[in-house]
Length: 637
Ligand code: PRX
Image 1 (cartoon, rainbow, N blue to C red):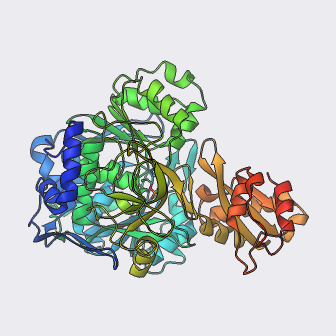
Image 2: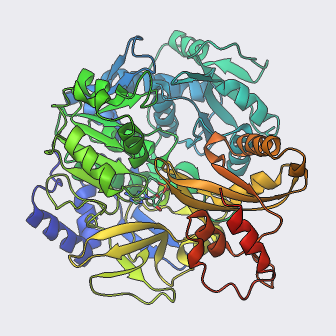
Image 3: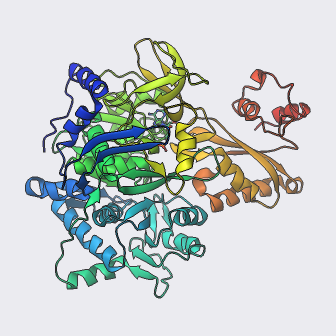
């Protein structure tokens, strides 16, 4: 496959970016021309950020899986689409060619149809990182069902919330998942979740761990049995459903500053073009290269850069079931050598965690196949950047520090590997089509270089979210009302003297813990569910490995008897309500919280204390009870 829209020099980048700003419609139409559409668009773009109402490629008809599968069969049928590396390195890996993947997706799409799934239905997918997860995602897209993938680390309660919000009627899961030394009982978690979800009429269970599971009569069926049924029915093909460019492709839940996660909605046409364009350009993908993204498909990175971006580009995408430290901290490097990986895309938290093991696990690895490296999910500190560059990239491979969000659908600000300049700690320059601007609190544009402010985007791009599921007003309020006529990212940002962008972190109450996005309000709600808790306040603090840790200040009546037990109980509660990823790293019991006279918790003060900067508290005179601050300072963990 060739990519005529791949930028190959700095001059080409500058020209493409200029074109994308002066004639966005012409620019994106030229890119979109290289995809397979059943019918081309009548209009490239219609937009209004105030509603918001954004439509790309209106009137066009397509199916994203025809672009990810069918169109490659002639030329790439025998090429590996997915290479799968199991959790246990002793177990056999799997190589799935484009033809195999096409067949498997069609087969499972027929299973879905047999089980009553129709275009527009919402399907919840809760699986480990096995090829069947990618197959399930693509099979939904094949028949026009809207997938809502929930990361395997979320609790039953979180799954139930997501199923209810999207009114899913089908769930696809596994008996269990292997992650490092652990087996995670996925089906048992789903059983708990479904007690609250009577709308779910069918659960399809794929075998992985052979953990004993309960299969409810009339509701639960085995993936393998259902495949056998469709095999005996003859015709294995499954025609792709014709979708409008603006039909929903998927929902993916993410945290915001309020307690309830929101379902970010992406649509078929624009998302496809954007995921592909950003994949091909950022990583400078060349045919036959082996590309390894270490994310989980439960997050947007996995959607865009394990599944849709690479497969729509006919790339070979490596899927890894396990964790970076199992069976030892050399696992990523073993995988790189085993498959001669060319492009490695991972997260700063993984790099920092592997750095902490020293160079032992890296020293005897070859790593010579690596030509490009990528980072995503959180700011990468310079130390980690250099370690990655020197020890993994052997000083030669460019690093792309890619800034983007669940809502943006794809990479927004990043170096283009080996083409545009890189700078440690900087996401550097916007991709073509992206118009970032920095604004002050009043929404006034901060012009020039050597400045910082809140990062907004002033023009639509094809991969942007269209709404939040079931609540368009929430989408408007969250992203389009803070500043008039701008998309607000929630991130703070600095633009240096050379016009390069450095993301400085969230400016709202959203934490980024090991690259996972968690709302402080969500964690507080969970802590407050514990019967001994009166009130709590959660803030982030710098954490060596996780980037940010979770610090909870808790007023509890019960802890006087046994603080340690209460602490453990609270952790258990948070695990139950949200999932283990949201467990606070520190819980400090306090007798009160710093509040304004109107009763608002002053998080700014708590944040400073948690960050160890209690001497920089600023003005505390407006507090209802300034004395409480001294107590909290003294008790800091
Ligand atoms: O704060 C930014 C941070 O992660 C947030 C988006 O999180 P999520 O929607 O979960 O998507 C993560 C994967 C795309 C952003 O608002 N973030 C993401 N990438 C970077 C980053 N912060 C700094 N540098 C990055 N490269």
